Image (cartoon, rainbow, N blue to C red):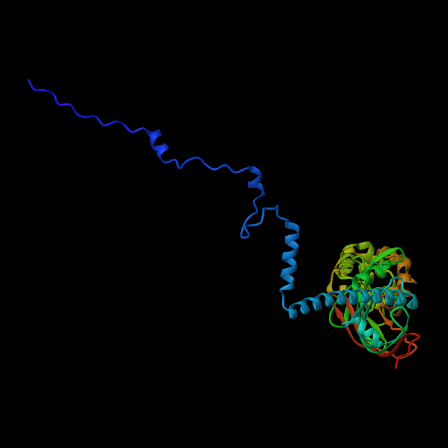
Length: 407
């Protein structure tokens, strides 16, 4: 029997003994007072304090501007100065324009202050030199003879002021100016609206008038053309032509003394005459009318006695032409009964007889003349009819406004 071997067991290490071996001995005690009184090293950092963002931001901005070059600072300063100078100059211009508008309104006796626009820059330098580069004046409503609505705009150049500063401008001298007078069709239609006439353009120098014209209680359809021309140096004239007044579909009146003028039946009026026996017999029963038409007396007697013969006579193209040539104005006074049978009011025909070409032309006239200035001169340069109205270019020189005469 084998004897068992005994294995020597190694003892397990004690961790507390290992920690004790690392001990260098007890720590030296330091009093608290000595620790607190110990001065910090010279190289140590400053004690922490809360940041002051407000002061730091100002310091950073100040330092940033201080770091700019001198030239940049000068440019910024000049820009700010120029901005304030420009603003002051513009405010002064607005004030001067307002004062000028009020002065012109009072001296020209206008219903509303005009629009004044002073050109050139800077204004203060011009004012100091008493000479303005340009001044534009727009007056919306100016009386022009019977047409009292006209827009006038003019631009004066090299205006010389008679002034002692901005608040004591006594007058101005205008060496030259050019402008425009506008007679808008919209204004003309309102101005002459009593006759219910509408004006539109009919070409470079022509205006078309259409609408209704009340005559002796009847509204007659009106058609006419006005030719616009310059008259002299300061006025325009209108030559009225192609005037026509329609009495329904029955007759047409054209003022004048020529054979084609006067009151004549329309083609529809003569056709109604041929169809209506009563009207035809009334017309043929007047010897003066038959004589003017050139119808033989024997033919007239047969037609008045036989309706078939009457229809044959009045239905012929020759009779229609002869009836259309009759000037009913000449026959109205002596034959009022016949006119009534034809459907025409004798009072209307009597009024038409007095509505001559000059009278009717005056009611449609658009003529006007610019006022003559006390000093200097004003001239019309060109007259033109456009889509929205009549435009007249004007120019002038040597005008004085107020008491200043300039030099």
